[in-house]
Structure formats: structure tokens, C-alpha cells
Amino acid sequence: MIEVEALAKRFGAIEAVRDVSFSAADGRITGLLGPNGAGKSTTLRMLYTVLRPDAGSARIDGTDVVADPLGARRSIGVLPHSAGIYRQLTARENIRFYGELHGVAAAPLRRRIDELIERLGMAEFADRRAAGFSQGQKIKVALARSLVHSPRNVLLDEPTNGLDVMATRALRELIRGLKAEGHCVLFSSHVMQEVAALCDEVVIIDHGRVAASGTPESIQSRFGGSSLEEAFVQVLGEQEGLA
Image 1 (cartoon, rainbow, N blue to C red):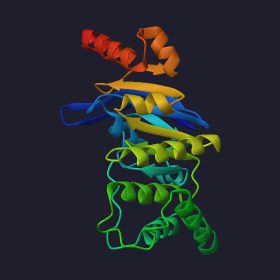
Image 2: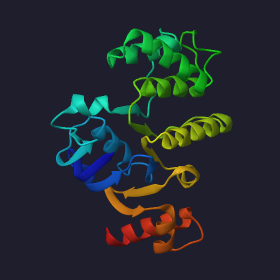
Image 3: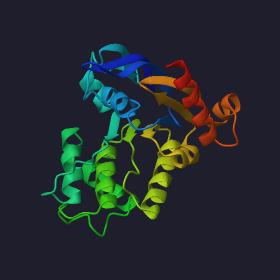
């Protein structure tokens, strides 16, 4: 479970995140939805301890991300906005390296890598060097890397960015599988169809603040419209009026 209270982050004169609060439960898919520059990625980076918040707090399974960042990292798997895989290593070596960093023993690590390669359809390129991989292949490697230590909480920053239709469908099925296994899945997106197709809970962020949150149905009921997209437009319109 992920709990966020009054989280804030400033870069000079820019308030990237201000007073963001929400929770993401186990066995649920929670989406951070908002336009580009809304503060979604900054929020995730504070949760996975790359950035230190200026104010507020966040806990991963009860572990404070500021007081015990290493403890928090043990409970999360992260797919950052940039896949950032090592080009000189094979797909398998990339995954193994992260498993070793997380302290997974050799024999269980081999089994886990084989499992992920099969689950993500990576057999064709598992032992090729990553230089020259397509965007979809890079995302699969980065996702396997994030799951190699079997984390309870999975954080995905715009996971379908740059993927083709078939790769996007496969990733959606994987995310649904993680939910079915009881994982807490939190991902950011500005793609409405993606959020509507996957999320149990939605947190709409605009100008660094939570503009609305709840189930897609409750947000649509509250703000009107025949779809989540129309409700989203209404939410942003209200925020512009308050600005």
C-alpha cells in the first residue's frame, strides 16, 4: 500500500507538486492522470526516492520514504519514464544485474528471470545485447527488471509511451495480472483511454495539486459528461477557474 500526505516539491520558483495526498491500495490499479507538466512524474520520483520532498510525507507499506529510503525501495518495483537499460548487456544480464542489486539469491534469481522472460514474451531477444532494441523491447526489459525481486508495489511512469498497439495491449494484460496477484499498482499517464481501461482509482493532478480523486465512475458522476474524458475536461476547467 502507498500512502501520500501533503507532498510538495519545488524547483526554484516552480512549484512542481504542492499538497498532494492520496492512497493506493493492494490489489488495485491507481492512475495518476493529468496533462503534461502537471506533476505526475515528480510525485512518482519522490515515492521511489530519487527526489526528496520539500514537505509532506509518503509511506510504502508503512515505511517512510524519507526516513528509510532503502527500506522503501525493497518494497517497490519501478519503471521510470526513460527505460535506461544498459546497452552493452543482454536483456537477461540487465535483469540479472538488478536482481543481484536487490540481493536475490542465485538459484531463485535464475528461475525468476526465466519466468519473466516467458511471461513478457522476451525469449527471442533475451540473450541479445540491448543496443539496437526497439522501444517495446526496451520497455519489456525495464519492466522485467522492475519485477525481478517480486515487489508488492509497482510504480510505472507512462509505461506505454512509445509502444505500438500490440505491445500496449500486452502491457495492459500484465498490469491486470499484477492486480489479480494482489499487487499495488500505481502508474502515471496522460492517455485517457489507458486510464479508463485499467484503473480502479484515479487521481487527477493539475498544476501540482490533486484536482479530483475516486473511481472513474464516481468522478464521472460528480463532474458530468458521458465519459471519463469529458469529466476530466470539466475538472481541468474548474481548476482554471480557481487559478
